[in-house]
Image (cartoon, rainbow, N blue to C red):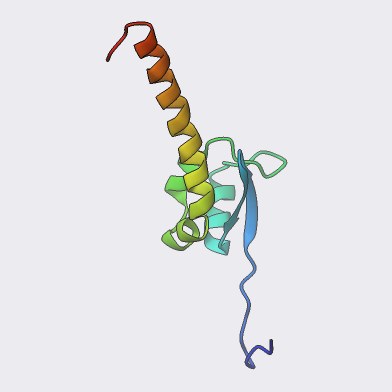
Length: 91
């Protein structure tokens, strides 16, 4: 494919999270680094703060990864509730 003259392809920066790599725009990446959310290996341990920091465009691009991460938490909560119900705790 030939790109039109003057067309600039935006490179995405990446940070690691528990389920893979998140692609961020330059502005979000700079904000994540400024807030010191990453460690020396560019890994973000606090994904919830990362999700609150990134823009709508980065959220849209990373939606499948974010849903995967949220789904794994939901399954753990659901399993915990089922275990509590099995013990007679029906809260």
